[in-house]
Length: 249
Image 1 (cartoon, rainbow, N blue to C red):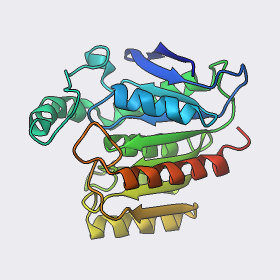
Image 2: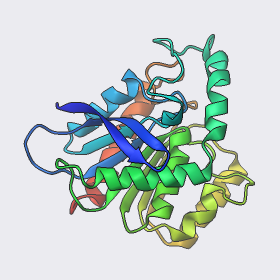
Image 3: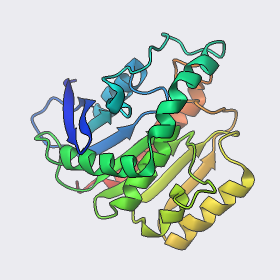
């Protein structure tokens, strides 16, 4: 499976990124994959390669590129519960600096770059995100409804907040099909109800489901949260969504 490290021009500099794609010389539907809070690492580059094996061009940007190339924060090989609080403590300032304005500037740059790659199709793409990446995937889709045909978020965070620019407030702009795969502790029932109402009002096709027996981070095999059954369901849902939404891309 071909893969490469790239530099994406953005208004704020150059974002390092990882791309994987099939080795057949053809153009394939694009997928913009946003990482969890821990950022780009072997867990995510291997996921990109696995997804590319199903016939997609997958681009994974370093969310924290303004602070240097990935990994910006040194990560242990396994992010166990004993070290997780310290790692999150080092990452939170970077997450908090990643404002909506920055997210949207980056999203435009990532989409512009992705859709001009010679291995990627020129049609609509999918945005996929894990943890905080779920919110970024949704923001990208609502800001670019003509360019994003599918959104998937797994154990997503910060989709519904009290902020005036909370991601859920922009769902009326959405045209993409949505799948959200949640753990039991990702969202309160009140937030989930508010999100459901917004998606229903937008008139888009969507599923928002809690995967039984999972906790936040369940798709990440380099953490203690990993669930093999939850991850399998994630793949089943994700591949079905992409197949339905990107067939013409």
